[in-house]
Picture (cartoon, rainbow, N blue to C red):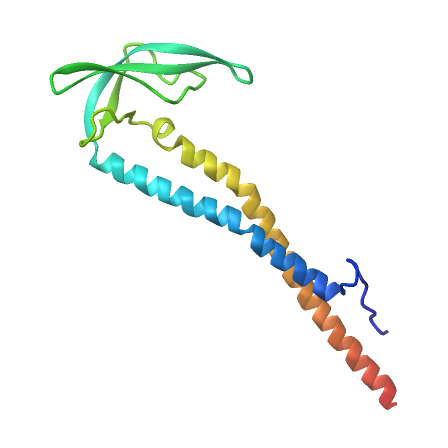
Length: 176
């Protein structure tokens, strides 16, 4: 049986179509690769900052209720802490549901040693929420690209083998 190549895109053979899909997949992979590198850098910078930050205890004074159209009511902790003899207040940038803390809870506050206005609550949610969301957003792209690259590579190999078998079959029939 002689294999005839089908044309999938205008004027492109199957082999060239699979190569095109492979190349497009590699080009598209630049986006998740960039996000992964950016997320890794973001994590590294945050981790370095956390390791060098000054730690003080603070008390949750209140939980601000923030109305969100999609999630309903979210809670933002407001923490009071003492630093260099001054009582300061920090309102978290991250809101969540359910309540992350109760009023009166003690939490660890991280303060930048060079800029005392740069403050965070020592929690995964406050420190790494952005990195986690970037990873969750990037993961489907990584999976799609890996599947597309793998399938197109296998199909290119299959196309090459079928072509070689067809050529060998053609040679065998012409020699007989």
